[in-house]
Length: 554
Image 1 (cartoon, rainbow, N blue to C red):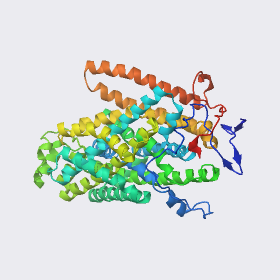
Image 2: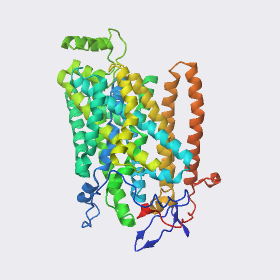
Image 3: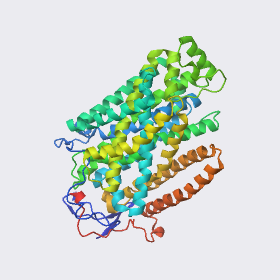
Image 4: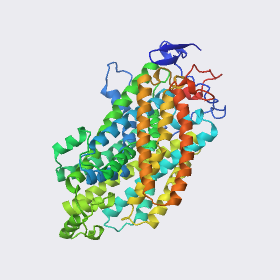
């Protein structure tokens, strides 16, 4: 195979005919066995969405509409209960001062989602499938376990968020454990909506996003935030008078927004469109429209997050427990005992946030808040289940029936959630939420490093591999995001004040850093650091052609 230098990329020629190209996978890993290649890898997509072909203009709203869907499903992870809790705590602890962090994290998230979408479009495989083929068995299994931990942590937040919403709507009549069971049941029901058509499923998710926008938008209009302070906090990257509390909150925002399993999810969702991957023009066009759609979807999710931050920044920044206790007493709220008569700064979570809104702005504010949380939890629980399916079937090459896959992935995530719901009451979940945020922060390298690695390999991406600018900027972004999240982990561990836990954390850290170093080594080789290419199975040099092209290219 001939190699040529094209700009900043080391490209390799692919078999081409009149602009048609065929992906050839390198010898990074052996090709799948003939048995595994007998049929295409099955996902929940039974019918692909047709893309209109009779449109010749540079930009077409018809084509954009055909590509609309995957980005909005992906954006729901930016609106899950964990994000909503991070938003309200940011507003209550720092006012409007950290909105610029939320904006920056969302932009970084968009750039990372772009890489995920491109991998799925160009290769026809999602990230878990590519990892299955490119990493050796032991690292692949470890990687799968780490991603599953992230999904479990996220799922626990989402399901418990739904349970809290049901508890608020029922005025405490539905306990936490019953809310978890209800959420599990209705998630199974909603997940099979795609049997009636993928577009109907996407429309249902669009409806849930609309419910969130209207619910939190109502709270925004009711509170009437200071618009000048809001814009100042959004576009002025500075935090006057901020201390360790605000710094930890800023780090928490980044960790809540950028979620590891969402990278795997988005790379799979883009496979739902009918694209001829052998046609370079179609692939390029799909990348363009998916990026536009993702930008619109994340802009909407950003606005919804801003609604939540602004509500709590305007109404509850610098408020004390005594202030809220007084407000609850005036309205006759049954939740007055949640806020002791002291001058400590108000501490809020999803549950207390709804109660505080009800005390200050009336019962309607509480119930509308709960409806928004229910929509956030329900939608993110469903997309989390899809993530679990894609990750498990990709890493383990499972060929079970769809119901069996759903049952297994839900059982893995739901079992610990149900145990927490049984042994914890709804008023004392903040500590668990902090732990789950730390758990997900630790798993970020296991999504970000592989996605940068594989999208930088010309042997996988051909003409669509990352250029020099994307390689450098992507590497810097991933390094910064991982460093921020590691700081969050260190702060959490040091706050535990236990020598035994310190020793245990130190041992885990050594193993953790060794594996992250292994993935980073492969990534650096893929980015072109040839001096590290000693025995790596990843190389950006001209690929050695395998005897037969992968069936996934067909």
